[in-house]
Image (cartoon, rainbow, N blue to C red; front, top):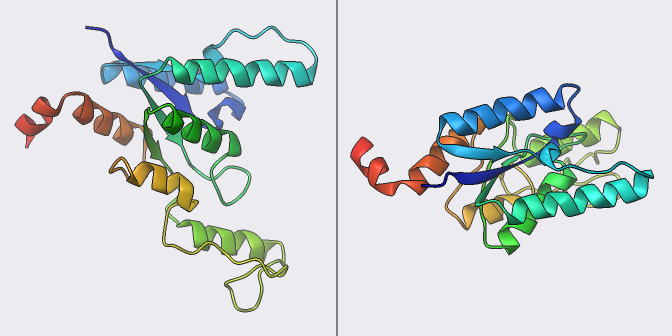
Length: 183
């Protein structure tokens, strides 16, 4: 029986040791009976920055389309929210009807992180519910933006605390009979 392919979404591709990080996640996928697919697995011919970026985007969409499910790293990246590319990958996968699981290593919710982010920049209004430009803070007691968490909740999943926890959820979903026996 073919192993389910898991696209590994997240900002891990920007780590100094991105290839090693991807290989470790792929190793964990294999340990749990899956085939991990890391965005850097796509072979891209380098060229001008713009055309290279667009080729990477198309290649990653193809990897997602060829995957059975996506596990996304929603840990805040360069701000209080998940990486923008990861958010897109999650939405793209959902639009294709793929199962999306996610995790975040941040113990704080989206609203507290946003308040702290704005406060550090002197951009939090005195009421704590708005930025100094008058825009409101999204405060729904969620781990991240309501659209990201909503896409997961629709599939009866909340962001996990680790990648491996997502793999366990995926294992139970892939083999519900075994999950019933474990209880």
